[in-house]
Image 1 (cartoon, rainbow, N blue to C red):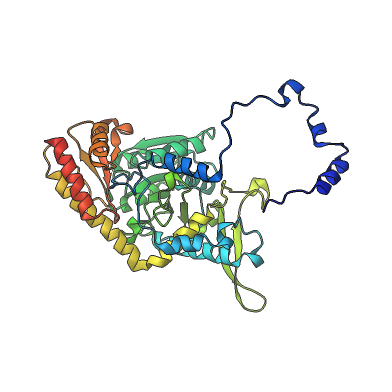
Image 2 (image 1 turned 60 degrees about the vertical axis):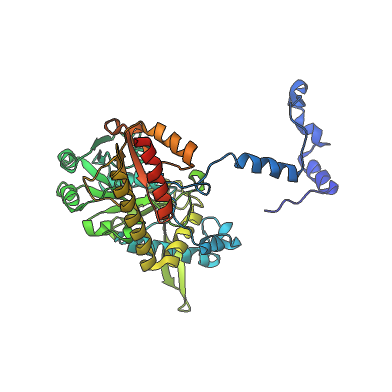
Length: 443
């Protein structure tokens, strides 16, 4: 709402309505000694001076526009077509909230419907919601869905240790106090060994946190053999090239949609996508937009399912704390529509081939070894001759390069191992610069 200053007559009318003579009378209950404290504040400045100050502060940051970036680990620098922001900044989308009234929210509802449709095509699933705060929240909601599918009779969750470490932490935080048994393992054989009749779901990542991918069919079959749901945390950019999880037998596919049009945004807002089988649709959190026909035979869109406690009885809700992250879902919809099937595949191919070019060159350096135990997509692990922090400090200070993720932070056995990420945004010149800089480290 715009700010409209009150006139003196307005103020007088309001004071009379509440039975006081002046605004000062409203503060009588506040002790006089603290009513007007002395504040040690600097002198006021103009809008122009504030802008100068903020721009000076902003220049202290070193961002991905200031130099090459090879840091991924869940937040990725991908190209954002200009059409994405052009659509997002339209007032009818930019200021929209939850579309409670379908008759005046047709544009927003259609955008959500198109987003859901494209997410289903990308993941190979049958139904998608719109949406969650981020990939971590979507993963936690997948656990809640699995518990609800089993009517809370199964209390065990099996997690791959190569699901994003922060996602695993959010799952534990989200479900604390629920009496769940959450267990983790690294290898497929060990994950299978943890499955039993008490397991509600098995969660793996594709590609995993180390950037590797493989056929997930054996894990899906093992989960289904004990009646558990198979949950896959997927990179949507990778799905432009790799087989969709639905073809592996996934029951729920979730992930972070930030790479599809949202940009890095200093950590948010991001987008959690969630897709599942139609038979689990009533156990799914969030909103679901459907297409219908009105009384005149014209196409229209409605909120088919909106299982938030503000819409239905609280005990029937399968809610999540979603709000207007729908704007980021719109960004993803515009991104997917603008690129299309061929464009999504082209982006994935560029990521794959550039990452492998970088890996081959780094693997040839003295002191560096690329781990190649499984195929990888756009991220790969490099064993380094020195601590990763030292190398990253050198890259940033001497070369203006943002290096990779220090895997020793989350995996003790991977101390001195760096997770490097290469996307379509890294030209050959940047990769060659990284290789040259790392060559100085190893020499």
